[in-house]
Image 1 (cartoon, rainbow, N blue to C red):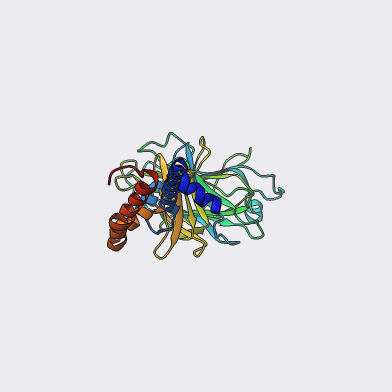
Image 2 (cartoon, one colour):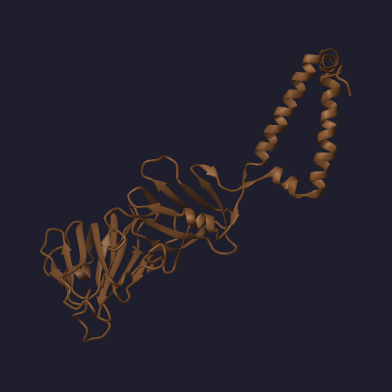
Length: 353
């Protein structure tokens, strides 16, 4: 310590190097103090605007969603003018549906299954449509869902054709129930009433109006939604989004939301629930012709948000000092002049005052 004191008193270059080092360290601390990630209160319009996955390029990934055995992961209840079709790349009928539709046959290995609309009757001006209901649940006895992916793969949807969402729960077994019902007992020839079921290489089955239950051990679940009358689209608003599909029953909670690119390594957006909240609420799935979007959070929830790996919201030391009149005065009128006087005295002793 004595040697340093002696060096300080005798060496002008040492004092200058020390002062420059103090300045650099102070600047670094101020920079770090202005870039400390902080949580943001939800919901936030900026995050909702960023929670968008473009068709063929990005996916929405919900990590560790709170889906218990038998709980809904996604649901849809049809309305007027809405026709829903479904494709599964790796599925089987459940035992009851298998016995009903293929009596005497054993349950086959998982294969492609489609539930689609047959030829519609020549009634384009019909007042109503047969309504399709779809429920996707986590199967009992299945492993937890570690990541629920939502994306679009069909680039030909276009502004006036259909809306698509693909659901992938990874290796978790999911169960589906789907049925299409006429609005009245007599109205069985409306658009969307004629449904075809194709299981693997079997011939398509012209289905009666009964519920069909399916088991998906893995793979994607591809849903399409069409208007029965093209002159009356099912999407609304300036964004032309279809909003009849619900995450979970009405909301879904997850530890982490990501919008990931299929070509870039870092997530375009990542929203992590704060440690106190543990999970963040996700809702209002919006399905456009070229994108998927959802709302993040509800009142009282907080989360950390990152874009391309960098924090979106930071604690800003400089802004805090500027906004506080006492700190601002102390910094501008006391600390800065005192520091400058100290630097001039020790590093430029021959300069004029």
